[in-house]
Image 1 (tube, helix red, strand yellow):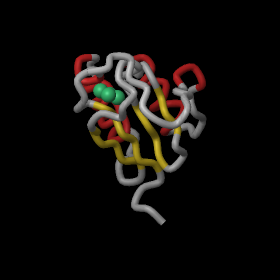
Image 2 (tube, rainbow, N blue to C red):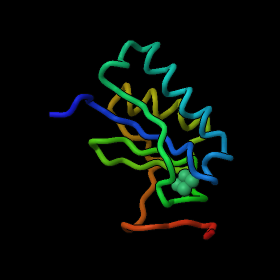
Image 3 (cartoon, rainbow, N blue to C red):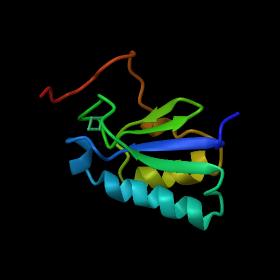
Length: 107
Ligand code: FES
């Protein structure tokens, strides 16, 4: 059994997501979870690159292994309300790709 019911990772460290306001996405989750009183059971952390550069900001939720793309502030608000607090993943931002690297901007 893990320490948290859900563990959310927001890519903020990579070159691409880091330039797509992913810090604001992270802060929306962090503040929203705290304000909802669930910060002890739903954890959000910043992460480095997830090798999906160009699709971001990228977000992944464990243990469900649900990946999201293009998580701007409106998308983050929906994910917070509907998934992290409500339990239903947001279909419009699901990131579905075969396993592996899917960088749009190879560097
Ligand atoms: S910079 Fe976010 S997936 Fe690579």
